[in-house]
Image (tube, rainbow, N blue to C red; front, side):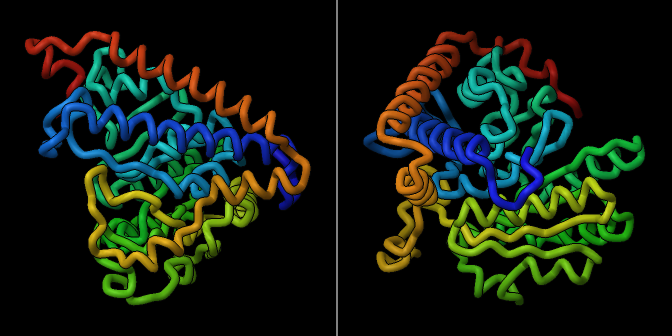
Length: 330
């Protein structure tokens, strides 16, 4: 989009709208997921069974990067993927149906929320910690071999950066100067283990030097900081200058999974979390880029859109039992 490091008004509105949509989507999925799981929590119950990881608070990591991507670029999310999927333009109806396990879902109900795949949006994700790092490098290699001008971006948590695939993939990306960007969403917690007890370095972005890559660090869950860092990284990748690691100090505003009581986090640390959606809204209001009427209109449009997605999912058919192995590869 813009060639400057400062976002245009159009880009600011795009990022705000997608952040608001992502936050509202997660609230909707939280409600749908908890249906039938009370008074005794059982993740097998309700219309959306299994585990559920929501991305409330981590929206800047997605929109600040995807604002620079186009339909030909690749995005690979982690086990917490909804904000990235929404920022990359994944079909909301089909994504919701997939989480409900319906035939109209992205993978006909076979994948669920941690294994979303949309070929049209060039988006995928995986529930295996760190796996998307290597998949993203594979996309980047394909782009280079085909002589294209695309970029591949993968997202992982700070815990994922301690997996072996991180080092192997980054080594190849640096060696071959691939058009690759790795976004590390540092929310400080690998489930219930704090970063200082799992990682030898304070910043994973410093590891970039070991792979002939650029390193960018963004503090305070700042969407504008992510925008600038991602602009430099994407431009570098398109110019054939190799990969970048972007580490974003972000905040998980909810538990690791829905139902997580977060007893391992102090109340003081919970209060210190920064809500990036509220921060961006206040800034745009103060700068006169949006007004209260704009906020209300966006919220109404989002509510209508999500009501339609939920209705689509609930009204779709469940896969037949005798078709359980269809569309599945071994």
